[in-house]
Length: 282
Image (spheres, rainbow, N blue to C red):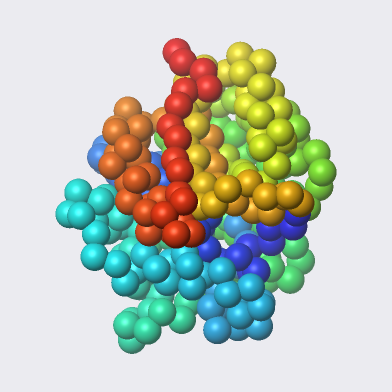
């Protein structure tokens, strides 16, 4: 599948992915010490939900379009506030028109001492990304293959932070490549936080991915998954997952509050399912 951000901005997978992102950032902000976020496949940063690409799929309607209008339990609402605040910051009129990708969501939460490295290989997208962060000294936009950057940009000088890996899944071997590059990055920075997004389309592919992670000998691997419908034949995207290495100690508890709510809001006719488990422990 090709999961280029512009066609799927604000869909159910983005909602889950970016919710997890903001909870990790909220944890990093508990300490005054600066941190760095490295976004390996940053996209353009901001998406027009009324533009041709987003209109072609209309996936945002059943993603952020549902969530932002729903009355939620207070426990979930409090945890979702940083994410929804980042979305509302791009829509000051109150009408949902623009959706921030991971770089802008991250930027919305950064403090003065924190930094973002936004990496993008696509030649058109990287220019749009540069324009969206023009003049922002806390953000460095680089035209580079995010996979290669994992071998050159780690560890960051702050020694604290997050590597967000969110590839477009244009290649058939993307799952294998994710694990290979994660192993390389983890050797360079074993104490870093890593969050790897993946689509759930072919369950067999996901099972192989998890088996590769288990064989990697990397410890502290938390898996978070949400599906909105049953698998189909031929396969279509029916779920979203995130692997978190060295997760914040509060993340599992927070996501056990959020996942049932997100499954209810985002799923087709109450068919949502969620799962949280440890691929590898200490």
